Image (tube, rainbow over all chains, first blue to last red; front, side):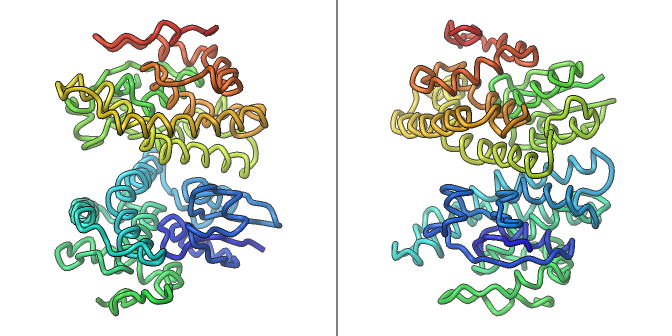
Length: 222
Length: 222
């Protein structure tokens, strides 16, 4: 049996959980907290939040970048990088964009300031950091809206890992009430389509003790 | 014919140039500067430094993450992700590590403070930022040394894209004299092996006007 070590609010863990769900691959979930990692997480991804995929007692893949590709290689259907090489390149470009731009500019600082700091007894959020991160959220949402308006799915004509990963990144901030959907209607319409996929159900059921999500977080019609 | 738009000191551009070289794929090079991008770069990677791969007048892939995979799909030999799925996952884990940890903690701040700022008339480096980034360089070099000591190549028994990408990241700082090789002998021995590959020759011949590299930068025996 597969086991996935992940933190519930980590966008990379959410991406892999959604990918496993799309492929209908069952797995046991081990919930981690990045600042108090268990033995497997500490050993396989020192200083990181995983996710770590374990199979038959062995770590087979660490991180969303490696693991989504691993799953697509070992369980090819349905393909998460469908189409021709240029279409696959476009999906990976968007993964790169969200992992290397959205995450450090928007996702990581908001989760750190609004949630992780408090969970570790570190006091209230730095409002200057929050302001800059919220501005970045809006900038990236504008890009998602543009893609959603001009294409069937974010990377083009086909549903891909880019849709899962972007939705995973956004969902982790949506849990904290930090996505201003009302100002980005076409991004919202696209996100409703992702939310309604069965692979996203466990993510919408996530609950961090002491930090419940806003009421609309799990609603398909919000 | 292929054209690659890239900045000479960008580690992502260097990764793709090395990958093209390993596969013996010829290409025309268009040198870009990220803060004064040409039309192709500005359109294909807004706010970024590319690299952008153009084929038959069309952008086919943007960024190293997408482009290395694209090249491995369209020109499979020699494989840059060889071995079984777990070996490939380990190579991609290391790419992710360097792209998402080394680059923001060490590579990007040092290039920005030491070179890009001056090239844009922005004054001298912020020594506090430099100190933190140099400490990160040592921390990551320690990890490279550990991998080089315990494995044939960084990701395991086989040469892979991880070797090219890590060498590309380090080489961009080596150009600026910022890699303390003497303190990391096994990392240095591994880097000598990469430097001696034909794919790395054009990278070692790079020259930024007004900012020549240290004398040992292109030496195979340094």
